[in-house]
Length: 130
Image (cartoon, rainbow, N blue to C red; front, side, top):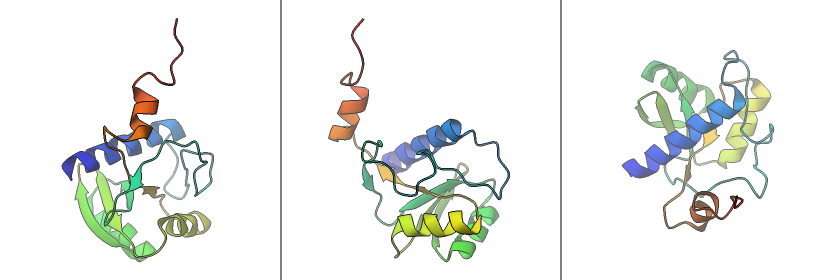
Protein backbone atom coordinates (compact mmCIF):
# COMPACT_ATOMS: atom_id res chain seq x y z
CA UNK A 1 0.00 0.00 0.00
CA UNK A 2 2.85 2.38 0.83
CA UNK A 3 4.44 1.68 -2.58
CA UNK A 4 1.16 2.51 -4.31
CA UNK A 5 0.93 5.80 -2.41
CA UNK A 6 4.55 6.60 -3.20
CA UNK A 7 4.02 5.98 -6.90
CA UNK A 8 0.81 8.02 -6.77
CA UNK A 9 2.67 10.86 -5.06
CA UNK A 10 5.44 10.70 -7.69
CA UNK A 11 2.89 10.89 -10.50
CA UNK A 12 1.20 13.82 -8.77
CA UNK A 13 4.54 15.58 -8.34
CA UNK A 14 5.38 15.03 -12.01
CA UNK A 15 1.98 16.39 -12.98
CA UNK A 16 2.55 19.45 -10.81
CA UNK A 17 5.89 20.11 -12.49
CA UNK A 18 4.44 19.60 -15.97
CA UNK A 19 1.51 21.95 -15.34
CA UNK A 20 3.61 24.68 -13.77
CA UNK A 21 1.96 24.42 -10.32
CA UNK A 22 2.44 28.14 -9.80
CA UNK A 23 -1.14 29.31 -10.25
CA UNK A 24 -3.55 30.66 -7.70
CA UNK A 25 -5.81 28.41 -5.63
CA UNK A 26 -8.77 29.24 -7.88
CA UNK A 27 -7.04 27.97 -11.00
CA UNK A 28 -7.19 24.36 -12.03
CA UNK A 29 -4.86 22.42 -14.25
CA UNK A 30 -4.56 18.88 -15.47
CA UNK A 31 -1.45 17.19 -16.84
CA UNK A 32 -3.21 16.20 -20.05
CA UNK A 33 -4.35 19.38 -21.74
CA UNK A 34 -7.29 20.30 -19.53
CA UNK A 35 -9.48 17.28 -20.15
CA UNK A 36 -10.79 15.39 -17.14
CA UNK A 37 -10.56 12.11 -19.01
CA UNK A 38 -6.99 11.53 -20.22
CA UNK A 39 -6.27 10.53 -23.81
CA UNK A 40 -5.85 6.82 -24.47
CA UNK A 41 -2.05 7.10 -24.70
CA UNK A 42 -1.74 8.87 -21.32
CA UNK A 43 0.40 6.98 -18.81
CA UNK A 44 -1.95 5.37 -16.34
CA UNK A 45 -2.47 2.27 -14.30
CA UNK A 46 -5.41 1.04 -12.31
CA UNK A 47 -7.24 3.61 -10.19
CA UNK A 48 -6.37 3.05 -6.52
CA UNK A 49 -9.47 1.54 -4.95
CA UNK A 50 -10.49 3.40 -1.80
CA UNK A 51 -8.09 6.27 -2.57
CA UNK A 52 -9.25 7.28 -6.03
CA UNK A 53 -8.28 10.96 -5.90
CA UNK A 54 -5.20 12.84 -4.69
CA UNK A 55 -3.90 16.40 -4.49
CA UNK A 56 -1.09 18.34 -2.88
CA UNK A 57 -1.93 20.32 0.24
CA UNK A 58 -0.14 22.47 2.77
CA UNK A 59 -1.91 20.99 5.80
CA UNK A 60 -4.42 18.41 6.98
CA UNK A 61 -6.89 21.25 7.56
CA UNK A 62 -6.64 22.21 3.89
CA UNK A 63 -7.23 18.56 2.91
CA UNK A 64 -10.32 18.44 5.16
CA UNK A 65 -11.65 21.65 3.55
CA UNK A 66 -11.18 20.16 0.07
CA UNK A 67 -12.96 16.96 1.12
CA UNK A 68 -15.87 19.00 2.48
CA UNK A 69 -16.03 21.15 -0.63
CA UNK A 70 -16.20 18.14 -2.96
CA UNK A 71 -18.31 15.97 -0.64
CA UNK A 72 -15.67 13.22 -0.64
CA UNK A 73 -13.90 11.37 2.17
CA UNK A 74 -10.37 12.25 3.26
CA UNK A 75 -8.59 8.91 3.64
CA UNK A 76 -5.05 10.01 4.38
CA UNK A 77 -2.91 13.14 4.49
CA UNK A 78 0.83 12.62 4.62
CA UNK A 79 3.87 14.53 3.35
CA UNK A 80 1.70 17.19 1.67
CA UNK A 81 -0.30 14.64 -0.34
CA UNK A 82 -3.96 14.04 0.47
CA UNK A 83 -5.78 10.90 -0.69
CA UNK A 84 -9.56 10.88 -1.02
CA UNK A 85 -12.28 8.27 -1.53
CA UNK A 86 -15.44 8.79 -3.56
CA UNK A 87 -18.36 6.55 -4.46
CA UNK A 88 -18.89 8.67 -7.59
CA UNK A 89 -17.03 8.38 -10.89
CA UNK A 90 -13.72 10.09 -10.01
CA UNK A 91 -13.58 11.79 -13.42
CA UNK A 92 -16.99 13.36 -12.73
CA UNK A 93 -15.74 14.63 -9.35
CA UNK A 94 -12.75 16.24 -11.10
CA UNK A 95 -14.97 17.73 -13.80
CA UNK A 96 -17.31 19.23 -11.17
CA UNK A 97 -14.34 20.85 -9.41
CA UNK A 98 -13.01 22.25 -12.69
CA UNK A 99 -16.40 23.78 -13.49
CA UNK A 100 -16.66 25.39 -10.05
CA UNK A 101 -13.03 26.56 -9.88
CA UNK A 102 -12.19 24.44 -6.84
CA UNK A 103 -8.67 23.23 -6.01
CA UNK A 104 -7.73 20.58 -8.56
CA UNK A 105 -7.72 16.86 -7.87
CA UNK A 106 -5.97 14.12 -9.81
CA UNK A 107 -6.71 10.46 -10.34
CA UNK A 108 -4.56 8.25 -8.10
CA UNK A 109 -3.20 5.75 -10.61
CA UNK A 110 -1.41 2.67 -9.33
CA UNK A 111 1.32 1.33 -11.57
CA UNK A 112 3.26 -1.74 -10.50
CA UNK A 113 6.63 -2.83 -11.80
CA UNK A 114 5.06 -5.77 -13.62
CA UNK A 115 2.42 -3.56 -15.30
CA UNK A 116 2.84 -3.40 -19.11
CA UNK A 117 2.39 0.38 -18.91
CA UNK A 118 5.49 0.58 -16.74
CA UNK A 119 7.63 -1.64 -18.95
CA UNK A 120 6.59 0.23 -22.12
CA UNK A 121 7.47 3.62 -20.67
CA UNK A 122 10.50 3.00 -18.48
CA UNK A 123 12.31 -0.05 -19.75
CA UNK A 124 13.53 1.50 -22.97
CA UNK A 125 10.62 0.49 -25.21
CA UNK A 126 9.95 4.14 -26.11
CA UNK A 127 13.52 5.37 -26.32
CA UNK A 128 15.40 5.85 -29.53
CA UNK A 129 18.71 4.06 -29.98
CA UNK A 130 21.67 6.42 -30.60
